[in-house]
Image 1: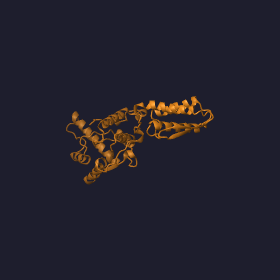
Image 2: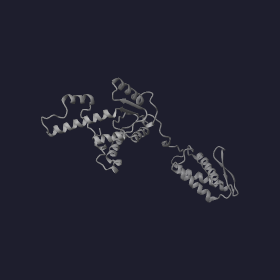
Image 3: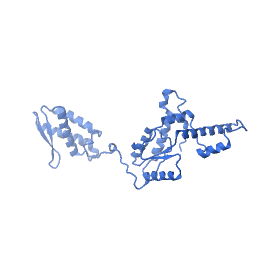
Image 4: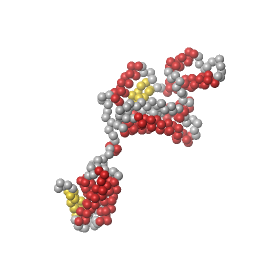
Length: 300
């Protein structure tokens, strides 16, 4: 229990220009996010019981679950605005009575509702001592509420549980939730391809090998003596070769400029999607293709 007060969502006391940057609400979400992140894993079940009324916030939680390769789902408690407003108003009245009783005010006078009404509130609401939202705060939260959409991946799977649903429907929804997160047929969460560490067989010597192999390709082109242009064969391995179509007038300065550009692209992993393993063979093939593409794009 983080014991975050519901007043953190209250924007009524703020000027209009500051409401979109409610620091208290953001700090509360950061505290919840940190608590969830600390316990989240593929071997535990984490239940986050909160408003979760912003789709961007739900997306952030979805991404965090995916990062640790564990499944997630959303359970939506469906309740009409009128009924929810009534529950909050009963909480407000209950809080007012409690303040009056604690302050010793209006002793012996009526507390605001009859005993029958109070019992009716408890039977219908069932909130006990739950704290209310201030009226303006509550209306603002309803206005800002972004309903979950099962068509989006961060709200899927979505399990709606309606306020009026009985024990049987509640048990059915619980079984569906359990099957989706812990059942034998739960989906396998795959990491984003962009976050997969690409394999480099050359290991810690990658930058050294990258520099050495590109230098060797440049050297082979210069040794071929194709000042008037022509095809230069670059040995790869096992008798395989790559051909670089060198245009006329290409000298050392231009080749070194292109080599430095290629090294810069591959130094930090940029542009490796089509390269595969950046071993010796992969570097020579990739650099040869890069030169051909550049010569063609620059009109030779």
